[in-house]
Image (cartoon, rainbow, N blue to C red; front, side, top):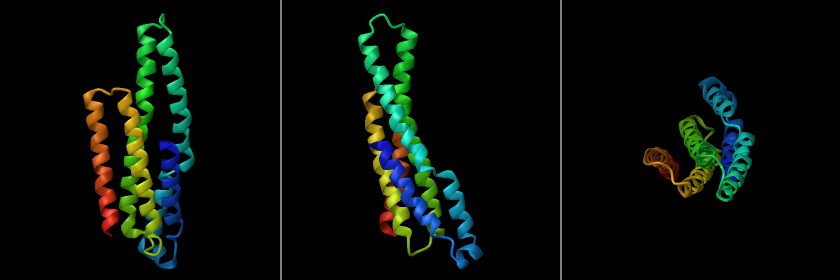
Length: 162
């Protein structure tokens, strides 16, 4: 669900970028900002997190039953089960920051789509964070993810005010 929400959020932001190519957007440089956003945000690649998460969880389930699994292998399986949702949180934070930075340049008639992107990515990040928590992240990882969520929340608050 987190990956699908992220992909939809990214697609919404891309729609705003696509409609920021009017003549005045070209002249002001806003279109170039929109193009930079479009080059960085790829919704289809967000969906791979769903497959990666399913695979990581299947491997984790197998590790619970494999009493003879070497400790190194078990640690790697557990690390991947944590890395997938943690990486999605970080991706969402990066993309929210890009969209937040794009908003001042966005065609004012379609800023709602960029903001929808922020809100959906915020939800995706929180959902991925919950999955990460189940995997008992070390304190430094938990702190890093919370900081990413805090940055997302700040951008989301700005989107709600404007």
